[in-house]
Length: 354
Image (cartoon, rainbow, N blue to C red; front, top):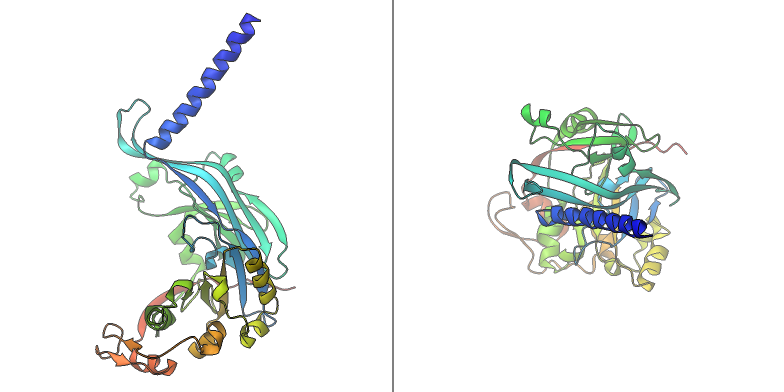
C-alpha cells in the first residue's frame, strides 16, 4: 500500500512539473491562439453569380472583423468554418533562462478542425482535422495558423495553413517567405510549398485602372454619413467575377429592400432568426463585380434613402485635379475621383455542376 502511495505521488509530481513547464513557456513570450469563425447559413442566387455566407460573431471584445472573409469561401461550392485552439511560443531563452542565441518560435495545437459546408444547401459535408495532419507527418510543423484559408489550385478546392520554415530554409535566404501546407478539401491529400510560388501558379493577375468602390463608399460617402462602422464595400474579391460587401451589424441591413430579398429569398428569414435570438453576426456578400454603385446603394441602404449627399466632398487627395469637389450624386464620384491603377490577382471560381 505504501509503495502504491509513493508511486502515485511520483506521478502527480511529474504531471505538475509538466504543467509548470508548459505554463513557463507561455510566460516567456507565448500567447494563446483561439479562432472560431462560426458558420451559420449561406445562400446562392438563382443565376449562381451572387451569394452570401453568415458567420456568428465569436471574436474577441468588440472586434467584429473576425470570421467571414472571402478567403473562408470557395464560390459557388464551399464555406469553411475554422475551430482552432493552441498557443504560439516565442522566446530567446532556454528552459533554464539562458540565452539561446536565436529566436525560438514554436506553435502548439490543441485542436484545429475545419468544417466544410455546402454553400447551396447549408449542409455540413465533412470536418478536416488539420492538427492530425501535422501530428502524423514529421516533415511539417504548424506556424501561427490563425486560420485555414480557402483557395483554388488547378481547378481544385484547397485550404492553406501556414507551416514552419526549417533551418535550411533560413540558411538559403527564405526567412521572409511564407510557407504553407495545402490540403485538398475533397480528398484531403496535401503538399507543402512556398505560398508565393503557389499563388504565381494558380492566381490570374491583371492590371486595371478603376475608381475604387471602397474609396467611394467607405472612405468618402459612408464616413461622411456616419454609416462607416457597420459595412465595408470592396472593389474586388479574391475570386474572379466577384466583389465583396461585408456587413458587421445585421440589424442595419434593410428590412424591406425588394432588390436584396428578391436576389436572396432566404435572407430575411435567416436575419430575423438571428436577431430574435440576440445573436451578433457578420454577413459576407459576394456579388457580381459588374454591379453599379447605384445598385449597391439601392441594395444596402433602404433604397438609397439613408444616404445624404449634403456636404459630401471628394478631397484633393482623391480627386483628378488635386482640388476638392462637391458631390451631388453617385455619378459625380466617377467624374471627380482619379482612377487608381492596381494589379489584382484572383482565383477562378470552381464550377458547380449540380
